[in-house]
Length: 540
Image (cartoon, rainbow, N blue to C red; front, top):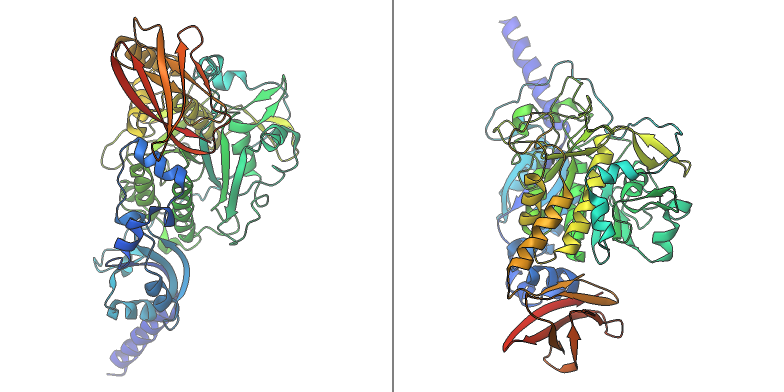
């Protein structure tokens, strides 16, 4: 009798301890009562540039664009024992911390739909994912450097991205968001002087510390940025040197927690609202400081993790999300990380300078048997700007991802009417292993010259097609004429339909100066051979 009583007391004591431990969780809401008002006033949700991107690709505003109900957030914040750490309008959820007892009490609120614990054993399914045994915890930000100076020609020539540069597609008019761990000295190093002088850094935010100082933190993000935006004359050039950038810190290098997933989603939502075209993330999540939160391979299905769900929504808003596949190829984990598992994310593996797969590059496929990584770029012996501001070589899919993201931005600049899905599809189809993908290389190394040429042929074959580029643009736009057309009448209208100018342009000089126009959306009407075509352009 005494033994049974002792067992009961021990069980109750253990249960009380468990219920008293602080947990990470997401609380989801049922609705957004202010939906109608926000949809009627889109500029309260998104910038003009973001709305113009939506219009360009015929993406309608929907419930996901509407901010999370402020009164719901206030009630959760005022709930006993609950701390709100992040929010997501896309998923209509808050990232919270509190005891299991306090969190469960939120289910009594009429506007709460459900609660998901980071510790999946606490969720209603009652299933506890088996813990990874003897998982070697790797720091996704680690990479080795030396001081072998040189230029970065191989890493762009491997992708044939130099062909885009030779055709004057260097990222101008494209906006890229970098989500990473920090950007110290981007405001000081010579390698970033060009983008500073040309006002190519549009802003940023430190979501970890909730402040405006993004020139801080780990130099990992600075090194990542350098592969796209770095510029040292005759020594180093990034893959999209004329793009503009937002720099977001979402990775907390001091801790590895599920909160970082939520901060990433917040940053992606901010990028969308600002009208960003391409997101690069050289991060990935599988294991955490608290092992109860660890993922297993079955979770890498593109649907389970909070960050991968957010990445899918980012794609649905019209952006291209590029993500490193991970550096666990020769580690016990072995597989890709989240959000590289998301179906719509362009996930990038790493090869060396000769195009041979790097041993550290993470493997696919996903547990639901999708090809991942998607493609590869140079990530071993890759040139970067290091923490001293010098040119050095390093290793990691952390760098293969931004190298490719920059070339993607240049390609999209060249063909702005193509959707994100069309661009991604053509990049995959151009890769050297497309017909015989492998578990570690995916479809292999893409050939952007072949994509560029194919898209040019498509446009040439369409006799009625007029192409305007770059779009958006700051100073001038150019026109690709239809076959047999040598001149066109060009009329510019503002969004109110007011005629601003009229002129004739010729195939010999197919350029229009727009430097005198204010920023915003305009309509270009082109008349030729008794035909008329109207095209939207964006002046930035």
